[in-house]
Image (cartoon, rainbow, N blue to C red; front, top):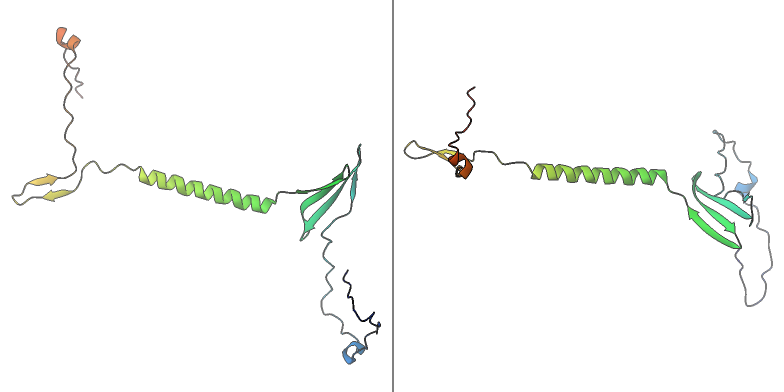
Length: 155
């Protein structure tokens, strides 16, 4: 409630004069009048038990957003999770994870086995980027001692 204080004394209360527009009857609305929006604070819900407690739900646009809990002479506000915000946050985390995995997979692709193939001035072929063949490991001592031969499968 707002109060206006005047240092010279109280102002006399004068009722407003009706205007010409207010005297005319209001036209009937073409559409049905919508109901007033629900109150942002719901009714007090007493809880059984000792000590006695009470809940007062809080809504916005007809959806619950929290509750006031009154017990033991204290009043606490408990917000409720918003399922829409939770869904948006989950989708954002999932999208970020998929983008990260996609970048990691593309970054780990192996380069081609043969590099650039070019033709030299004399007709010779140059394979750039080809790794040199790995040197053959020496035969183990037991294979030399037994005079073992490599097993070759003829296909």
